Image (cartoon, rainbow, N blue to C red; front, side):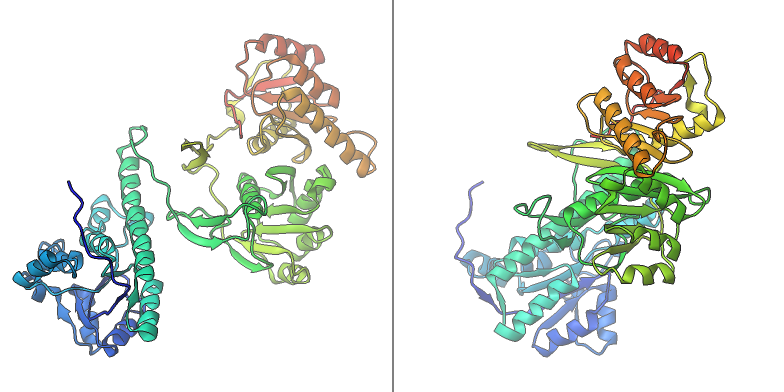
Length: 537
């Protein structure tokens, strides 16, 4: 197909006729009245036309352009050459102008369309049939037609888009090419995201567990940031159309805007603290540089935080704190004793808010609820030329999932500590080793290239924490040790035993499992296999 030759796009285009068809009518009447006051003829459809007419505005129904009534329950109303010719016609191309004149097609200079709320329908749990009826056809078609012909047409899909057009009309009397191009880019992004949501919904509904041949990642720009991981890197936050309770949905009560690293670490902290049922125990998590440095349960949040801090008070300075219950004044008073970047919680009482208000640089985020750690979902990671996608690590693990492989069985207290340590380990960068006792992390080793070094670091943290607290022996003495993957050799397990662990939990599955089990039996400790690996890279 040869590319047609068209005249250069004009810089300034006057707006004489606008087609307005919106599901969300927020601000519609005010904006339409201003367009009418500026001499713009209004053309509309169905409910939008009725709303405009009801407000006393002169409006032409689109059926007057097409010569056909709206039909098939509103499925067909704008899919007509009189509409799309008006949007796609190249006004300065003689053969286009001749065709428009021959078929009595008047140009449309502005299209304002927002789409049927498909995403909201799915999120609300609507039936399959109701969701199908919320798939907009005419809207995306008009948006794409106008955006393709942005040389002459301004396309708006959001109220802020229309506000920009109105500003241009008041200031310049028309729209500039630069504005129309920017609006076109936004319009195509909107229809792409809309179609992506539909495609994802269909793929999920097939239920065969297969991956679709094409995968889209899309979101709405929430904020541009000062920089990314480092000052020389640009960054922005986009929000998914299917939000999960967390940083993106939280209400920030105080403090400056969150940075890239703040958001990443705060998300990690909240996802981990959500593992612990607030109706069972208060829980506190402290995260620093993508890894938890202290996690603990307690009778109340103040005690849970004190116990989490004890694990690694050095790393906790400048960290992120997440709790699983409504923050109270006592917990807030403990948290502000050291410098903390962000605190995130489901809620906070007035006493806690008052305590934090004296720390203007501390960011306080309230989520309203906790994310469901067992909910299905996907995570993404970019690679050169593409991206990886995987299911969220949501597999449950409980006492009934443990296979005891040593001669000695663990006590009930040891089982509780093993499961607590393993829960923390699944949120620690691999290779991960976690010591825990009585619902408190004693030492955490993260991100090492071998498991033995992770065990050494965890043991060192446990010893240093005890020394800082004035305790006579390492926090790891009498602890349970969790490993996120199997011990490939016995040396990592022996390191844990030497640190004081009396029970070990690990996935198992190594060709040297027998050697590792023998070492555990020789040391007289209990060991359980989970059959579940929880790497986090």
